[in-house]
Amino acid sequence: MPRSTVARIDLDALRANYRKACELAGGAEVMAVVKADGYGHGIARIASALANIVPKYAVACIEEAWAIRAAGQAQPVVLLQGVHAAGDLADCVQNNFEPVLHGEHQLAWMEQGGAVPAFWLKVNTGMNRLGFRAEDLPAVMAKLEKMGATSRLLGFVSHFACADDAGSTMTLAQTANFEAATSPWPSMMKSVGNSAAHFIPGQPLFDWSRPGIMLYGGSPIVGKTGPELGLEPVMTLEAPLITTRVVKAGESVGYGAAWVAERDTRMGMVAVGYGDGYPRHAGTDTPAAIAGCRIRLIGRVSMDMLAVDLSNAPEAMVGDPVELWGRTVGIDEVASCAGTISYELLTGLTSRVPRISR
Image 1 (tube, rainbow, N blue to C red):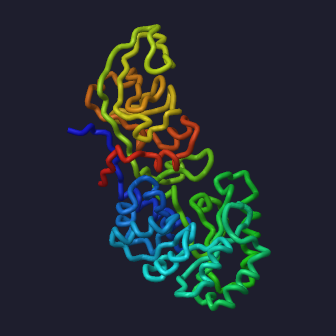
Image 2 (cartoon, rainbow, N blue to C red; image 1 turned 60 degrees about the vertical axis):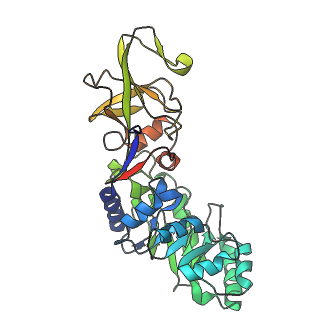
């Protein structure tokens, strides 16, 4: 019989978070970002759960778009990294994939001839990862006009660097840059809104927003948790308590003897570790829960196990499920204790942990 370490996926919460994104998007339409295997939740499961309410999906690369098609979903799929080979353009045409073109090499592939898919252009407004600089956009558009491709251009996209930081002025500057750069083509659609942008008062989201982490209940805003933003946790990571013991005052637990009991302490071992994707750097005092009662980790996280202090859960028994993150313990709390973000925890959960939908 397999161990009962599982990730429970609440699809109703997913749909509620998508509806929240739609409310915050104002007049913009909302595509669902389901890259990185649906942020670790399973791309087929997530795409299918949203199929009746989502007009368009967004992924990083074409193999993720194929996974959506394999799940039976026919909506357009935006490829946020565009295509990685010239031959991918024909696949985009045949399968209603919408690549985001961000570099001269991709334009050169389009110039080679053949069918041109519906596509977007990426504008670099200051993040300096991908995209054409604003001053280069007229030349790019002229090249597209010459090859007869502007009729297939859907519009322009950009991406914010600091939208998660309420104290930063960079989002305002990037928005102004984007509006100025794209103003000569007012009929083209525009898309800039990542999850964080939905929570910036007065921030224009233009024609299409692109929520990602907020769909899964994680916070896109520094200093805020998902529940504080009105988001519902979609994943609950659970693992069984596999033993309990009393550690006497002065005794230590785990590798490096990193935690030493100040008094006799009932503790337990939980069947989850960094081999499952639980963060190794989550140390003593990282929260967990049993039966809705918050407890804490003690000592170092091992590959397959971690230790918890059961002082606040005296009735806990071997076999009881321990919530590592979910509704009682927010994933943003755990991420903060581990010095990371919820995105990394969700996408880092390994295949050893079954995902179970409800």
